[in-house]
Length: 236
Image 1: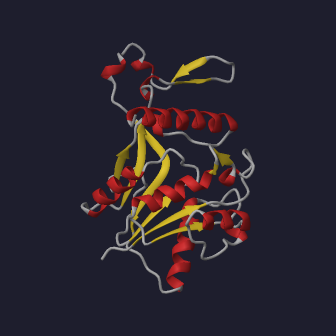
Image 2: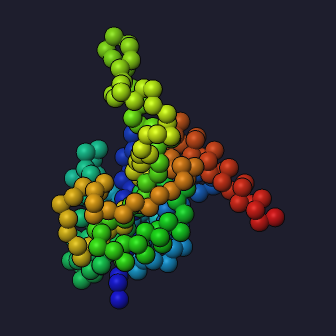
Image 3: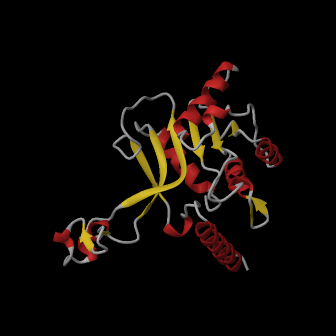
């Protein structure tokens, strides 16, 4: 039997949006949405939170997650990557005689995530030789026609040869949606996530929004409200 765990990293020291992970978002702490979608998917033997913050830990427990440890301070600064945090959590669980076949890292800032994409990722990963399945979405504009602004406040295209090409003649590009990463722990790979050992789970753009600034926060709320209103209309 394949055992799977969901790990939600959530440190307390957000700078640009203070207390972001537990800031109220449509009546619930932001982290509650990630916990609830993980539980609703019924894919996981456990849903745990890795946090250095007691308040976050208590709120996470209220919404059904487990907090088996408090993350050490050396893994809770602005420079520690998600990989190190997840590895620490898995090592801790292993020390408690808990080992898993699959691990899904879900960000605490994913209120638009839907469980059907977690389920799709797990099914595709189990039935493939890939190492990872992760959320992505298409770019809204052809990257081949992008440009930078120079030091003298002028424009310079990255690929000037594409200026006159039609958008439909340029290859579509995708970006990381920053919602979840489903990992087959039985396999090893030296490839980066955006490589041949990864399965892209494509989300529609209206379900993808980074939440790094207050402007991002407002846009995520607009999207959430629009999606909910649309779903209500479909059921009436």
